[in-house]
Image 1: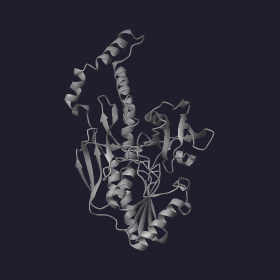
Image 2: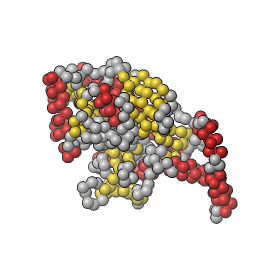
Image 3: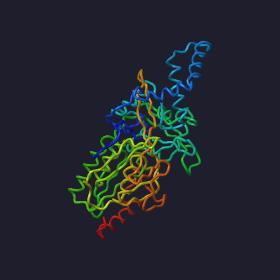
Image 4: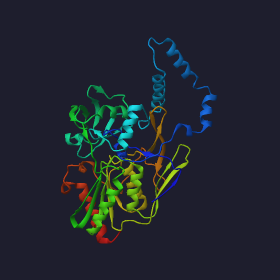
Length: 408
């Protein structure tokens, strides 16, 4: 795999995982971008316009006239948080010292929570479940993709940000949290009493199914996913699998780097994905090498396939390396950068969009499958037996036809 472009730490974030902040960055090593690296001309332009004068004026007025003494640090943190919230971007957030420390802990693999990947419905601003993490308290309790979280304990989530919802849901192992959910098609609000736990994720499952066809399911993309995927492909190759079905349904995404490495295992030489900033400058380009699988490939996606899973599915489609089956994917294609601040706080800021090899941005659009399947037949549930999965049966039908015709 080859990477070119401006080497900055870039995260693809599609869904917030309530294991901590973003569990998809388990063990991910990364660089950060200190604020002093910003162009001085940009900062000077603000000062020349005197646009920060009211900020200083209000701060001084509060210090002089407010009924209580307020530390400068509290006022500064409030101002920074307000600036980031003014962006009205659910994926850009200011984190105080404690929150930033928790974020770093999540990257290094320490997770305690309920096991939900969350997103924001762009039409309603509701906090929605992208996917429960398999085997976690939320998954065992029966919380489903597209459930709307309306309240956590006694806190109404109306008007709350994604990260505020995350903060309410995570906590120490063994502590209790009550989650109230509205589910499409269900009249009453559902109540789930969960006990937080340590979350351990194995993101890749694989097996041989009928007619010696390989089946790989990726539940999310973290640091270890590429190696797990490589192990799965090695096993299926030893078993002389005739074809491969890759299941990305209900996969909320994760690490951009991991998505690229997984795509590289499947595809031949070429561009997998690239990122652009607001000025249309390319920040990074990610390429695959000439090594690829040489068996027919089918990919299953649904409306909850997001982020990194859309990168993989989109690249496969653009390469014409496999058939995409299912329904239009989630459509989240922005890139976040992590910036540490003096004193231990930090900012996570959306800095770019990513584009598929064809030049298509899927942000807000999603990926249209080659073969559309009916939503009511979509199981894709963690607990569904494979032999009862109607979408998988359709993928098997398609892949068997490819084997019989010799069309790869």
